[in-house]
Image 1 (cartoon, rainbow, N blue to C red):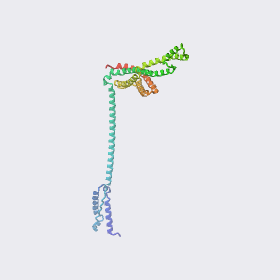
Image 2: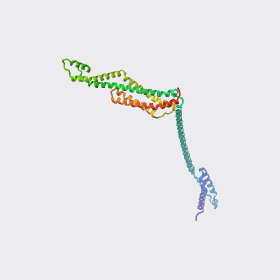
Image 3: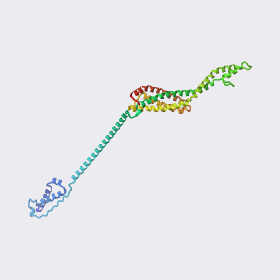
Length: 344
């Protein structure tokens, strides 16, 4: 049989276990300090749990010290970490949103600055049409370009004519030299006329006269006359200083023509606030380019380069043609300027 003491021990153990697990859910939610308090209360309740009345019969000292020192705060600490991570994630999202807002504000400011600059440029363009240029915007400044360019056209014709005369002066020397090579030998005489007179005088004397020589002298008379005429023409041309005049007028044409070719569009912009591309403007730009090409050929021409001379002449010829076309296309513009402007 089982002894009474063994039965008592089993009953006490069952009572302690039952008292320890009566409220597990409340035990898990409490803190470590409340757990120890609850356990001590449970142990005290086990002392009074004696359904068979054995405690009075057997005097046992069953001080069971259930010291459950467990830390049940791990769930709450994990929740705190999750909350902190969630809070940090929210802060990062807020910072990203702030950065996006700042970037949007910067883009808006840039667009506003661009619009302000565009408006300022538009206001400047519109202000250019206003009375801000003084006399250069009135009829005086507006007529300065057409009058000057008209004079430049006449100067261009004069410069071209001087260039042709200077070329003629240089070519006369070659022509005279070629004609002199066709003359016979006059012996001691300097001209065909003197040699022919001497031959005629010798016919009545004792000396024999070469008939072929007399015929050559007679044939040389018109050649000598032509040479004399060419020499006189060359002397006359050389007395005019054609080379220096042509060079000086060409330099003046290149300078003033280029300067007022630029002044014309500037004056148009001052009056209207914009330019009007068309045949007149294109012809003026072509003239400036051809003037530059002609001027670039001068150093090579001074060294006797015939190719540079041909390019120089061709550039000036085409430039003069464009200049004439510019005058024709500029005449209607001149009439409109006179109509729309006032003195001064």
